[in-house]
Image (tube, rainbow, N blue to C red; front, side):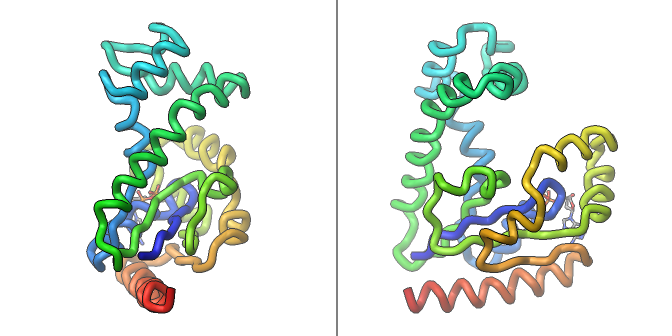
Length: 198
Ligand code: ADP
């Protein structure tokens, strides 16, 4: 079994790369999706978050992520409290995926902020998806984000160079989808060999 971290800035094409890896036979986990699932209404995470932060973080009975974000991102001690609740649940959900996967699987964990939180993970290998800023902006405009939202999100994340500094493999994604597919296949072969020799 090989456990791989997959990261990239917003609009770099992480999710697209993740789907190509799925097609090639990887077990791909989306950490953002897990983070949403572990605080779904009625779950252990939901109850702990409401007990810690109060009913003010609820909207229509669900946790309002932007309200919670406003509280924790302006106060590091509150962020630490939230992470003390969510991180163990996220780790547990990921371990469950690992446990139910076959022993020769290649498991890829898609984590946007892997560089920013690098000390919390233990991967066999890390892959960074990279694209020029102008290409990323173009993709995000097409997705309906405003120029101001795009600049704020890119500025809040680590740079491509920082992500590359922790990566074993870099997938360049400034070209079209056929070039990307070839890039992902190239890296897939490297992962398959690494898994065999592990
Ligand atoms: P991320 O998950 O890193 O934010 P996505 O995989 O969602 O990025 O890609 C952002 C957008 O760009 C999506 O709409 C996706 O379909 C598109 N996209 C990604 N890679 C390419 C590519 N090589 N050619 C054309 N469109 C792409």
